[in-house]
Amino acid sequence: MSRIDLEPVKGTRDFYPEDLRFRSWLFGHMRAVATAFGYEEYDACVLEHAALYIRKAGDEVTRQLYEFMDKGGRHVALRPELTPSLARMVMARGAALALPLRWFAIPQCFRYEETQRGRKREHFQWNMDVIGLASVAAEAELMAAQAELCRRVGLRLDGPEPEALWRVSDRRLLADALAGLGLDEERAAAVCVLIDKRGKIGDEELLAALGELGVDREASRRLFALLEVRGLEQLGALLPAEHPGLRALRELLALAESHGIAHLIRIDLSVVRGLSYYTGIVWEVFAAAGTFRRAIAGGGRYDRLCAQLGGEAVPMAGFGFGDIPIQEVLAELGRLPPLPRTLDAVVYPMDGALIPLANRLAARLRAQGQSVAVDYTLRRFKHVVQRAESDGAQALYILGSDEVARGVCKRRRLGGARQEDDIPLAAFGIA
Ligand code: HAM
Image 1 (tube, rainbow, N blue to C red):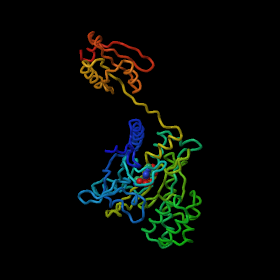
Image 2: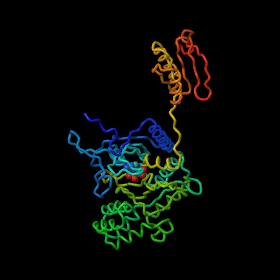
Image 3: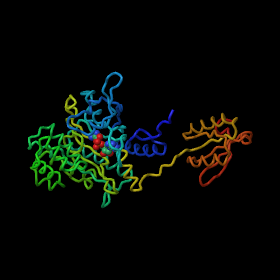
Image 4: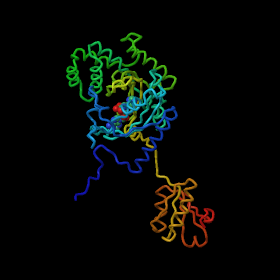
């Protein structure tokens, strides 16, 4: 038989312990921030009904689905994102849910896309969502939580040159312009998805695709001009003051001030997001330091997703924040934390007959809350010490027959001090 492929499936990742230490560190901060903001953790299965992701608007996630028929003939998919599962769960509980809710999750997601810097076919995505609150206070809070995470993992946001920026728009601004061109809501959503690809496909291809949706070249050019708008002042000059999109952005900025993040927000109409379900404010977070130019997080308001899935409309807003882009950024800036392996102690029986005693000693130390490994190799002392030190152990408990005959074990402190002392086995209740 030929040897199996040792590489993980293309675009997926193996997490060796040193990789998992980073992941756990990052997830720990994500959980801590979400909990600090009063969000509750939830999850769903990575295997979902494929129908949840099959949207007519041309969303990229629809085309990137890992999908198959299960043995019962169900069309299922590995989730490319968590939001539709969240909507399904909210719909399933319906009126039994006491709204508003604040929920978070760190789902593993799969998208069959081209792997490139910061993008793989498997990623984890921290999600925070507010369910049942129509106020922009939700979006402002969500952005504040993202900023808090960025700070906690080491990005500098408060100097004259913040290392991450929030580019924010409101889908209703573009939607209005599209309605003015006679496009219904469905086609308008499809145009947003197309416009999101502008950087990737280039203007010529975009113009042709817009033409197919019924937007002629002249109207497309006017749309492109709208996408150039930056800042509230420029926007205010174009729209009536009571335009809901403009009002929402004004309110957002005022609330952002109270969260201490107003200086990080850039009104930028070129942000449209590639998912068709957004209905209001949309935003993406970008690193402003280093060379990584893709979004590190994205979110928005999606008040009609439940209705699109056949239920009652529920106002919802949230974001997804991937584990891969932020790692790219931190690595480039030299901010990855040192995360050595840690272990409190190693117990070393010098002879096979002492292994049972070593196990009892380890159990007593573990009962005190220590992480303890027993070295069963019976190798020479020098090798055991080297291995224990490289595993980050603070102490080595040596069980040799001479010591045990005297009713003690030897404890050697590792690292700098290398002090040794005898401890009576009776102190552990195992003499
Ligand atoms: P999204 O913009 O598709 O939004 O993804 C959010 C974030 O997930 C991205 O900014 C990026 O950090 C990460 N991400 C997505 N795809 C990949 C990939 N292939 N490789 C690495 N990282 C990736 C959503 O998924 C929405 N469901 C977010 C949301 C939650 N909106 C409302 N609630």
